[in-house]
Length: 382
Image (cartoon, rainbow, N blue to C red; front, side, top):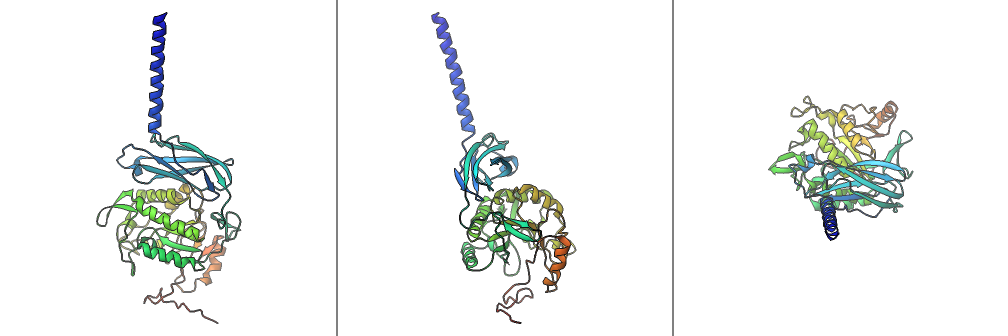
């Protein structure tokens, strides 16, 4: 009997130690995620996760997404690698109440992370994201009309910190409700400067690894997105442009799509984001720009649409030839007209596309000696 009891205790001890080891191993492999217990409606819930596993390239080797369930509605959101051993998933809740989330990843430390949080009322000035309403107009998610008055800051995000701060301060004193700007740096008259950070890791001067993004650049952009959001200004992000000096305009289709997916994973949860697929997209043509190839804009729009779970407004900007704005992934027509009288063509574009029509370039105020940049600032009468 004593031997039986002794053997039983040994067996139980072995089982207990085995369970403890298994439990501690699982806990070590899947650290608890960090996130806010309460966020406002149309704010951002950010789930932060960590893994110490080594990867040849975590941007490509790791897949991460999360399913959010709020008030009976489910939404799947892609995550992204944020450098070091950090991954994140961002979510913009559209309704108040209780929310839960669960993650899915091929990395065990990022897989099956769960949590719950509460969504409270939107703060003053937060009207939600913007959508097309009544065919030709825009409205915030809470029904407040959105009136568009835009300006252009092409290379603003790639200039020095003090200039960016001065720009934000100036915008806060202006009537503008939208600014359009490029993510990729621009090489053009008055903009021939190298930024501090690029969207990709620089492996040698002006040489980049297009398989590795630079999280420092994207964190810098996010700082400015929040600053614009605080002032109630839409950030109309131009994804591609032809005025290139670094090779970004010549990326192949796979890298174009990977870039779109990474950008949408990082920025889509910001309620003030819009997308412009390209500035003067028709210059991506060897007939117009001998060093560039024509891109498959339709495929790229499908990639953009599939990876933005919130359906932010989407358009594309031309220099001379209009894109077919009747295509389903276009939410609003962007018109640039070289005649100097674009207003004369707005009625026709509106009737043709049955969508809002936005003129993003009438020309620019200033005295830069260029035909497009010499408009007088004084108000004209008559």
